[in-house]
Length: 112
Length: 112
Image 1 (cartoon, chains in turn blue, brown):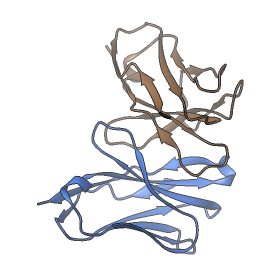
Image 2 (tube, rainbow over the protein chains, first blue to last red; image 1 turned 180 degrees about the horizontal axis):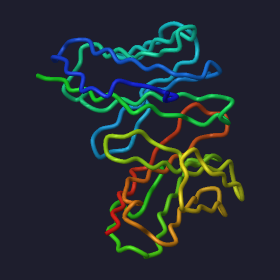
Image 3 (cartoon, rainbow over the protein chains, first blue to last red; image 1 turned 60 degrees about the horizontal axis):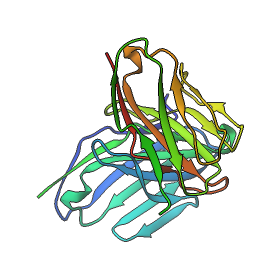
Image 4 (cartoon, chains in turn green, brown; image 1 turned 90 degrees about the horizontal axis):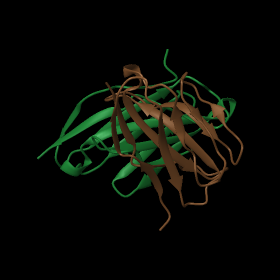
């Protein structure tokens, strides 16, 4: 079992719709959770991080964390073609020396 | 401007050559990282450093070596490049306690 799992996609959504991405993790000691966006051929850039159960909103993005179920999700509202990218879930665990463990990413395609 | 730099951006080299991938940051960060990422795959941590004279191996076994003589500089060296080293190499940095890792633009290495 991978430590951080994501559906590789592609997740195809029409422009203006909500894109919903999920990520599950195996280590219950995980403390902080990150969503990075990576455009093709580019390096990852941080969109959001969350460390408490519940929702965290930032503009069109909402991160949701459920530690009991060991999943974190990212919602993208009013999806735009410029949101087409791979979204990487990353988890920081104290047991792993606070290093980030990345999932394989979910490719999102927003169609006009 | 605070940033993180990597050179070269692209490198095509023959088998057996020694290469050094450069990474520098002007963000004043203590922690630096090297990741390896194959196309469409997850990032794998290969080396990290907490500060000057600190280097640690990451989760993915790598034949590369790193050094950290200056805070802002974290070069990665391959003594004898092989086709299996063909990949994208991403350098990142963060503060000791910060949540966010900032990524450089990456070096795409091809070994013939």
